[in-house]
Length: 303
Image (cartoon, rainbow, N blue to C red; front, side, top):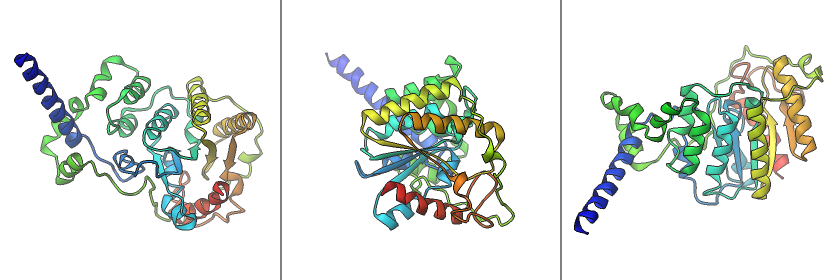
């Protein structure tokens, strides 16, 4: 019995140290979108609105503006090029600590056909998630090669060689688990040379079904929202549209209508919101000035 107790104590201490080392060595947030750690620091059941998606989400919707204007707390749980299958697991993760009224999904990544994202995108989204069955499931659907999944289950395998480049930020963030306090939103600079013209693209009426993997997880997201009595809103942030993507957005919009889901296409509201010079960072993303206009317009959907 004494030997058994000693073994258990050793295992517990080992796991605690392993977790601490993993938190210290893992790459920290790059100030673009949510660094995941900061989401866990949100007060329990404090968020009424949670945004999901890629940079098209975290460069568009400002939780600070929403709170200032109508007093509702929100968070932009978006990461770079966030695949829709990771979005689903982020929603599962969010529901562990929050009971939001709204899930807002930016639909850029629904138009992508890749079965798996590159490693940088996957690690940015998954590495700092807390260990759980949900994280394991997220890894399994995000990493194609089974042998490569081990370094996601135990990310110290990937990052143990970083000992020469560890900074005080790495150590402090790893030990305190306090992330970047931006609520997931990224203020992008103004680029006065950018202007968006989608007049011809928006006339396209042809529809093209999204990939089977994206469709599978879109359905799972819809079911998850219904099960938890959450209003799901699909949005498309303003950007320079491509013909192939627009056909898929048309399909998503029709599918949303069939399922009584609100779909807001801000590319159709560019003139109404007077989005022009100074409102874009590049042809894919809004500047902070453009984000303010879209966020303020979005408030009426919340009310």
